[in-house]
Image 1 (spheres, helix red, strand yellow):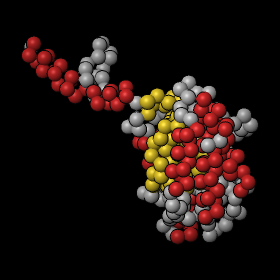
Image 2 (cartoon, rainbow, N blue to C red; image 1 turned 180 degrees about the vertical axis):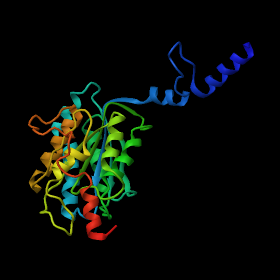
Image 3 (cartoon, rainbow, N blue to C red; image 1 turned 135 degrees about the vertical axis):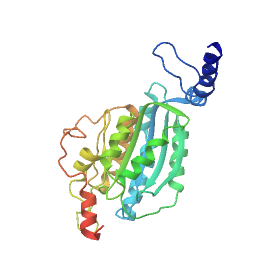
Image 4 (cartoon, rainbow, N blue to C red; image 1 turned 30 degrees about the horizontal axis):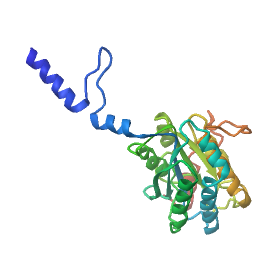
Length: 279
């Protein structure tokens, strides 16, 4: 019997680190524990997920990117950064379109002051513009979820920031993707862009802000800041980034995000696509 228990302990030690006490269960593998211990503590891990589907015209793309560049380098962002427990955040920036079309533009970067913020903004500015077909918020959320693991950072808050001008029209259920992220402790915020009048060709919807509130965002303190005019891009993006870094929500939000009963169909984008293309 002694040899049997010795074998069990050796196997457990090699595969899971150790066996805990009564009710303690099996500890995580040594590699996972080392990665967690060596991760840099930050106030927020922030994933910026930016729409580059064909519905985004070149001017909207430029305004969207400029909004993030000016927001991250703003005085308000720096003030929010310094007000955190650690005084630093980790940010990554990727572009998305269809279900399998996501491209990281700036990998995880530590922002702990103006120089790091400027460097991050410069990386965004240098990236060539691109556009692609379909709009898959589901694909963007599924792509964002594993980015937090193994990033080298450990945030008090984990946030995915989704900006875009259309409803999900491919890649599966957006609400299921949202719920998976929320269940893992990730907050999703939204920046819906409502600049164009809805028409059948672009498949824009009039109530995109409501769609984002009820179908896309979720988690503790989640919120939506809509952009209805080109002049609002910089202010809205800066406000959203500051709130995310500070861990706050807009003081004037009236309708809570992720309402219990959606006021709009969460499959409206897929329905519009089928009506137009038949698939």
